[in-house]
Length: 501
Image 1 (cartoon, one colour):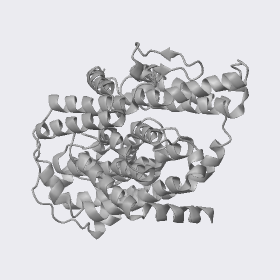
Image 2: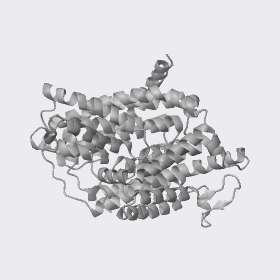
Image 3: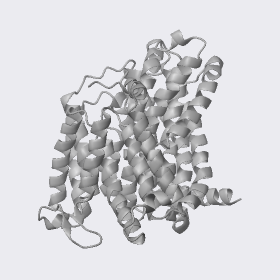
Image 4: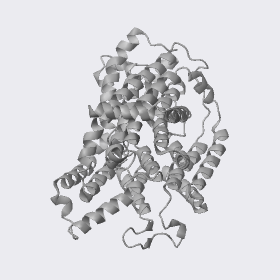
């Protein structure tokens, strides 16, 4: 009964006119940035963080969540129409979706993607609601040692699931942890790594780092490699799938939902991994695997369901443990901190309206996406013709004004410029910036819990292995690290992420 009363509270919160408006803004903006290749949900949310400072906590988090899962919808539109995924998780959709469009079935492909995503979003939102309270109850039993070990698991998992070299991903996590140490020591009050600049006494501005590494760096990368986008068709028709289409998509949607719901919880890039895994499973189970790559409906329905389910369930570790599962969730942690909210299990107890309002808004947002996206396909097609060189000055101005408005500190703009160039160089060096951001967000929390655990144990490091939960989590982290270095696993990992060393 508690679940239904909590959901009733969530729907009453998310259903208020103000929150419905911000949910609508979020999903529309998410679809827009998903449609426009090269911007991405991570960069957009990073750019919008300054605005959330002026909004109510519930409204701001509902809007940011809507941007995230809305981008999963929008990414499939460009993947199907112009063979250019708007989101990384939509790369698999382009394989068969574009071939369906070439056969004159773009409308059906878009509808299959939208309906599969809605079903997956509905199921995974329900799973978030079911597991939220039990996991929160478990998390309340955690002490400093358990939280430290849990964060180690999260960082190690982000290394294992990062694109490219494992060593480079490990280096990015280490760099993020070091950047998180900038500021004043929490116990002694001694300035650290501030270079004598008083403005950095409270640490590097999370918004400035996120906007630089993801927003500005992404703009520079897109300007370097801008391509002329040719839309396959100016008008999309035949949106309603046939009875045979429904029959072919039914099982892939179910399997994709289950795969995405499970893998979305994993730190690193669960939604992306889920889409690839779903495509592989569907191809192996298909009676006609030769159809894949030529317009197979299962090749669209499965991955689209998987990536949307993964996007939803990635909120589980964020809402229950305060641990981000991917860069977007790390930005959500930043948004909570900006609002004065300490992420973790106490949020469900101290602010139940916010906690359940976010969960309920996911289902409302998914319904909005289905109702609005299919009629607006014509508008999205027209937006695809806008050159990127027209968009980037507006985006840059928006970023700069937003970052400066948070603290009115000119050093934050210097930080945006520095980390923008640094992020661009990291991309050129094939170092994925996502582990860096996770390390930067978790670094201060990792240090605080490490030192607190050592103080409580009077300097005895064995406290991390004598406490059963902490020891289990550390063994899990060690096992993940060992497994990814095994030759067979490493070879398969490189094949999945298509590494090019």
